[in-house]
Length: 381
Length: 194
Image (tube, rainbow over all chains, first blue to last red; front, side, top):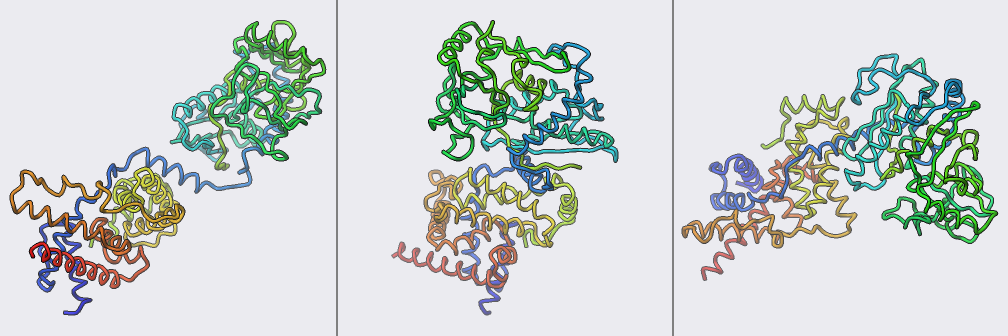
């Protein structure tokens, strides 16, 4: 019998041995080879990798990856940093329309009655992420993942909690958030006849998922514009009150790239962050057709420290910075007056930069996210 | 031949998974251990093997529309082969696993109890260890081919599809490897007897 036939017989015998260790070899197969083949199968029979069982977690990871990859990538897919213009534009329109509702009463934070743009919550606003939909419903879905791939599950849960609290404060109806593995799924559902509001509300999602680091930054006498990106000292040397956290999500930029350094080539000094603000004194009010937010620096010691620092140079300007972007410029007196109370009456928040008081309140009240997220896919159904 | 044809159940699962990836779960359960085992054997690190296995199933699900029928095992192993090769190329070094060096691959306790065994059992254990050492000494390509057959239990056709060879060529190659192993084993046996 030729080699090809013997090879075929051996192959068949090995297949049978795989199913039945006691299988008999074909009569035509060389007896010595058949015997050796059986011994070899036995010798390799225990070549099992450790911990080779599939797991539900592993499957969820695969499923999450697939959903991410197969999600359509329409025009709404964009880099993380491109959202702000869209969000702020939406916020401007939302804020102006909401004024009619807000003007009627002065409000405390615990009772913010201004639903965004007045559209009614869509069906399933608190249901699972796969609600029954109909042709009159618009669904917008985003998948986000932490920039740190090995994010701690506790941090993920904490981030989700903060986002949910922000969404509640901002009164965004029809919004569901949930974790799927290490990914965060946001689903917004509204009626189609509210398409315009839908677009604006999608913009508001950026506030929900924003890292939300608030910093008061000393910009000295340097000309700084609202909307400008600043490299602050927080991740390098910390603030007046805190050391730089580890890890710190803000990357140190290179000269000439990214957020700007000051004219001395150094990061702008962070005076304080949201950690030094007393949220129990946070208030949102509406008066004279505008919303104002009031908040306060914690403790007299902190206020004294600020006063001491700010008294060094009377020409200083303070920038209110959200995730390295200047959202308002404040005169130093705002930070050193009275009992450390800060009111947005003292700086222009509702005009330019269009981040309204409700959004700022939501960011301040519930603090910074423990993780930074990036949008990996988004789609509108 | 093992896994060479699709069962009706698998056809149904694949059809449903085309519209809903979650339907693929039973095939993930069924094939994960083998795919993981293959990846682990090639890369030698549990964490990497897990990651690569996930990649295999992610690619499989992502490319479901491109699936043209045939054995699910062959399809998955083919993806696994590509994933592992890419991974190893990225590491720019050879696979880390040596059968001689990795106790997980040939666990002595599975080869038989030496202390309490009969003479016949002791001889069997010695025989298995000897064969294991001979397989470990094979050139990497030959060793991998043999283990795809003996450990991963793929058919010659499936291995051929995976490695871009004909079914006949795979059979011949395995036959020659086995002949070579047997000759080496007999030679060692003679030397020990002499």
